[in-house]
Each structure stands twice: as C-alpha cells, then as structure tokens.
Length: 229
Image 1 (cartoon, one colour):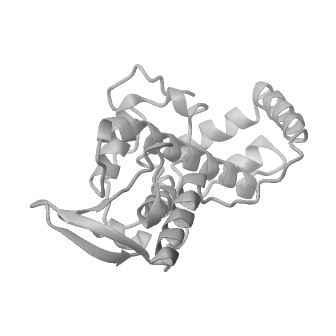
Image 2: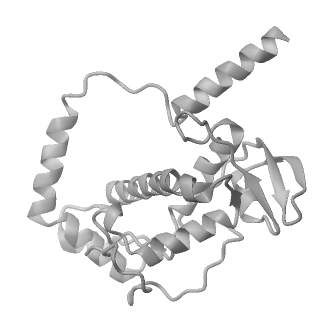
C-alpha cells in the first residue's frame, strides 16, 4: 500500500501506541558511544558546548542541538551534522512513527512526515527550518529505505508464507504483512531485477563512507585554518 501525500489525517492503521522519544526505538541497533562535540541551546537562548552521543540526544529536555549547515550545498557540516545523521538513523527504526508498509517515500502520508519533522525539531535547532526541512526529511527517507532493505535481507525466506511467519518482534503484524506481500509481487520483483542490472553498470566504487562531501570539505578547511595559526 501507499500512504498518499495528499492525506493529512492520521492513517487508520497507524499504531496507537504512545510514543516515547526519550529513548531510542526498540528496533534500532545499539547506539554507538562515540561523542560529538556540539553546541546546545536552551529555551532562553543560552548556548553551551557539549560532548554528546546519539543516545544522549533522546534524553534532551528543554535544550536542542544546534545544527550548522554549509551555505553552498545546504547540507549539515561538522560534528552537529554527524550527530544529526546518526540520530536520524535511530529515528528511522521507529515503525510506530514511520510504518514500513509504503512503496515510495514521496507518497508517505503528510501526517506521518509532519509528526516526524516535529519530533526532529524537538531535539535539533535549525537556523531556518523552512529551508532545512527538505534536506533533513530527505535524509530521513533515505535512512528509512535502509531499514526496509535490512529487514528484507535478514527476514526474507523462500516463500511468502514463510516470510510472513518470520516477522520481526517489534514490527506490527499488519505492517509486516503488507510489506512482505508487496515484495513477493511480480511487479516489484521485475523492478528489482532492472535495478540490479543497472547497478552492475556502476564501475566506480564509492569509498567515502557515510560522511558527506560538505562535511569532509569543512573538516579540511578547518584543519588548514588551525595549521596556519
């Protein structure tokens, strides 16, 4: 099924479980202990330097992480950009907030996207939310796609019924059923075959990891400035 973007009401089949955004979602992998050097701002506008892990962000109350952006690319940079990306990876595992039974991120119900955006803004402070929203939500959509790809790789069996029975514990049964049936559909299989053939034409390996080019450029420039001084 697809959640059409024109729908702004809460979907009837969306889980009614009360959300808890003080801890990572149950499906999310264990948060890494790496600490990012960032700035936080409280409701009075006071700014303070901190060293936080992605797990620490979930516990923030009354403060937000200040995210810095590269003006040329419009992408997050520095440790704040790295922390945002890491935390979005955690958020993307929340099947109660963002169900897995959709085919295209662009068609996900607006209610779901707005709820996710409000959740992100409760933890992170953006200089211009209107401008930054497009990139941040696009990054979240990419992380959600990764989650669905991993679930399929780890839980797919030889037959439809076997795969339906191999449902992950934290994924609602209705979501898993729709997700699995879509992927056993002949139309989806043919699309995957086309994508696989197209991917074989990519002969240049991507060796830069998950760190964006703007973040790498910002690090290089910052190091050059420090060296000169």
